[in-house]
Length: 237
Ligand code: HEM
Image 1 (cartoon, rainbow, N blue to C red):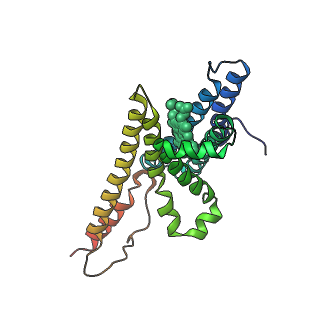
Image 2: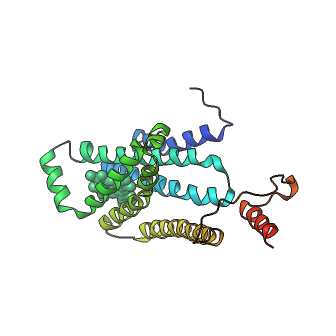
Image 3: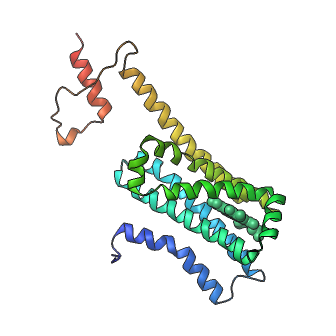
């Protein structure tokens, strides 16, 4: 596959790999401090969480800009969240604990913050597994329902972060506010659409509303809602 640098898609792919490259450079130049394994583990966890909220930010940006092509970017960023979470988990299993399952088991039982990490990872794993287009087609409505769990993953990731912190809570708090703002946006759009649907469809009988005049003059392209309202007004006695 040839990457074209003037292409936003290729640039996003490269940008997603930069944190890893930066990490490799820090390892090569011994810049990770006295506890390099912990620093590496923490950096990977941080990037997974950052990609998670970036993924969540795509839908509001898409709603505001009406740029339909953003769905692919949401999938790509979500896969990066999964990628960094997997490296974070591997660092925990291999570097932190050298795959000593007894110690890992005890650590997981004793550290409740890891439970939230496992919950977040399980969701992100399932979302990544079901992300290809063919899986979306096959799963139908279940796909959308499953992918809404990304909010649960993000909140679990933040709780996992918050729980193990000993000092400054500013960063997890910032992420939490961000996630609630993004979630609030989705809920507001959902309410708006519901209200509009109620206005348009009488409860006694369902109507299929088709615009009477399908010709739209380019300079005055109206929102679909406006077209429907105008058509209904024309029909009214
Ligand atoms: C989507 C899943 C996950 C995300 C988003 C995530 C994110 C994070 C973040 C942001 C931190 C704190 C970094 C900091 O202090 O700046 C962290 C720490 C940690 N995570 Fe995760 N994590 C995930 C899954 C897991 C899993 C599955 C495990 C282990 C089974 C795990 C084990 C740990 C441990 C042990 C720490 C503490 C690191 C230390 O202070 O030494 N995480 N994680």
